[in-house]
Length: 301
Length: 110
Image (cartoon, rainbow over all chains, first blue to last red):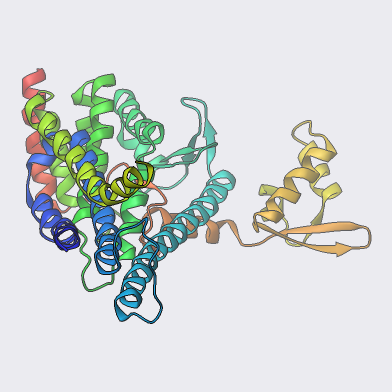
């Protein structure tokens, strides 16, 4: 009876206090790569623990697996079946939302790409580059398995010199290469799978910032910190024709301040973070798998 | 697409081909394929005219540009991560912080 309680507690900690604490800390920004891994581990471990709690609760109610003793007249067995069904329902809901987000994102992106392709002019500087004749300074990428696009507006080109433009393009190409959009998509799906009253923006917000930092680091290694920082300031500080579209405002300040310092290395901190991430994945998996494995071993011997 | 936007009425493939041929060499079938593809993407509308299709732009260029910008600036109310912007706009206060950090960087580099 102790396993389901432990797993349920783990799931609760991983969905509530842990993300809240992590999102308010500043150390993840020092080690963006390890921090993204930790966030992913937390998310997966929370799902595994929640599902595991359901599965092991049904075991401990109706007996171990490998002992087919289901008795439809026994309330205990019916309860176990109900718990198992509820667990399956959670899983189905998760998959359903993930599918909906994936389809919705792709539909929106495809429409956007169609529009870009008829409105913007191709530019040979890098593959997939399109120049949009708009005064608003804009630079973004449209990720795709094939035919991804990097879109830059004329307004942005006017504000950037050549090295700054290269820094922006290197940043966007880093996003495309590493498929950061898939990381964000997973967090979006998870975010939407939760009922509106429990979910919070914090995890998604930090994940967004972390992938920006990853792309910044990539661009910094290619072109140095100077051009990238100047490009960020030039595009973010430009007077916007329509105000109030600030998305991740404080993140921009963080990004530039980060570039002002030499590239940080925190081997210990990132090592520890990776270790915690692995631990989080192993713990619920082993706990759930253990009774099944024992049953198999028992059945064989 | 430019030719369809420039024309007040719907055009057949032949008409579009004629207009484009004035400036560049293009195969008739290429024009046909492109127009067909644009129709599938719902960027053009087409209607039967005898044996040929007549194409017209589904929306004026300006409308599509507005749609694109709304989407790019994430003002369509869709929270999905369809595109990843390089940077958003910041407030005046934050712009000051940005310039400060940049000055620090330039100083070190300088």
